[in-house]
Length: 213
Image (tube, rainbow, N blue to C red):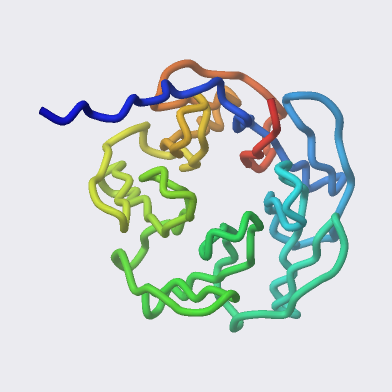
């Protein structure tokens, strides 16, 4: 009989995701793994992404009035329509995150790298992550009414409490993003893969960043 090829056991993770908070009063990103960075102005929407392909997420902001993404690593991009919700992800597998927007009225994700996807229901919260480990990010939504994450790549997960802020990230280093939530009342991030972290101040905006190990 044919001997099956040997399989190589997975090595240690090369990166992990960590909690970040953005303090609107000072326009400052605070990283739970150390350090801070100031970026943005009043009413800007904070984001994190690897826009230069170095394996580390950097701060960015989206300015709703001008529909423009500004990157701390350099440059900017005007994209989308008024009232779109900004998201970022590596949708084409090139190793860099690209801006995208979610249009609530049509329930559609539009990718600046090309293409679009209609997914979810009205009043869903748009999310992005690599939930199947294929090296590309896929749209997802969180439905507050039933506390459920729905993945466009397949499947769903009920997680969190009413009033939680939904997040996603690879917190255990398995190469797949997992749902998480931030509980504002106790300033705590809870990870569906296990564990939690209390970080930041009341009123901070919770985010997630990928950092090389």
